[in-house]
Amino acid sequence: RGSRTTCFRRNIVIVKPICSATQIIEEENKSKSVNSAVTLYNIGLIHQEGNNLIRASQLFSMALCILPQVSYPSLTALILYSSAQILYQAGDFKRATHDICKSIQEYSRAAMSSTSHLGDSVELNLASTIALLGRIHFEEKNCHRAVELCQEVLRIRCSVLGDHHIHP
Image (cartoon, rainbow, N blue to C red):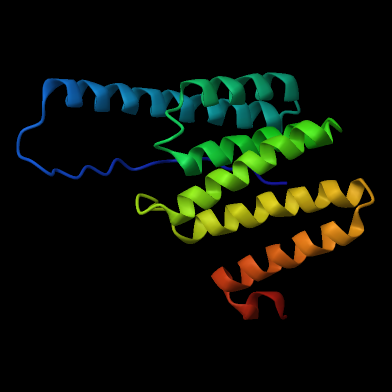
């Protein structure tokens, strides 16, 4: 079980030499929201690592509330995955599965998005999310579905890391 921290670089594309004041204010507010969401997420990870799962869950929820999710699918997916991990640990498989499915949708959207600058890490995070769903299916004695999901995880990891990573 590893912790993850997230850092986003600001990529600004200037289409026209002059932006309206409204656009500038909107970008500044979005940036503040993202910075605050990342900070809340990171504090949540610290609480999760310290086994204070209720507080971690609250912080992840707060991060999701202030994050402009449409513009940041990778970060949204990462927060949802962390929330799902807590729910899984608590034995709440139904809610964990719900967050996992939303996370998978966001990772898929990020992978298809031309604005995703995270490359292979999106695919690897998607694989980790699918692996968690596979564990839930295994715990629920749905072994056939668990095997299918594990095969998908292996396919993704091999496509990103190469076949050599599974051979000694």
